[in-house]
Length: 89
Image 1 (cartoon, rainbow, N blue to C red):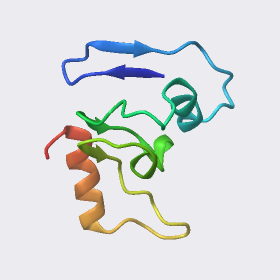
Image 2 (spheres, rainbow, N blue to C red; image 1 turned 120 degrees about the horizontal axis):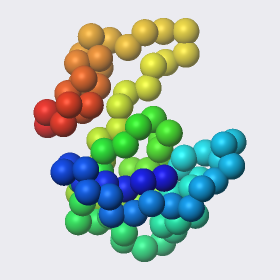
Image 3 (spheres, helix red, strand yellow; image 1 turned 90 degrees about the vertical axis):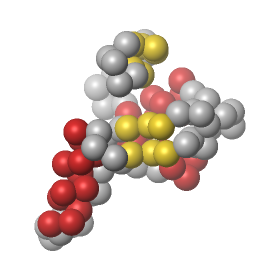
Image 4 (cartoon, rainbow, N blue to C red; image 1 turned 45 degrees about the vertical axis):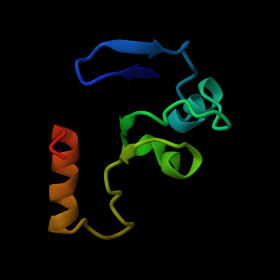
């Protein structure tokens, strides 16, 4: 797991984990949710971190919309995901 800023400066690089270890599990192991690690930061992450917003305090969390099972994302959700990936907030 790597934590970097918008200028691509790496602030944290975790030890390697076995491939079957979930991204969010690594985050919780490295940064336990009982502390305010991210309270002054806007966080952008991928779908591997579902649940971040309910467990961690932060200024704002940008997580893409997840495609519902056997359905497609709406055009509005697709556009929102594109904006999030380009950091057009």
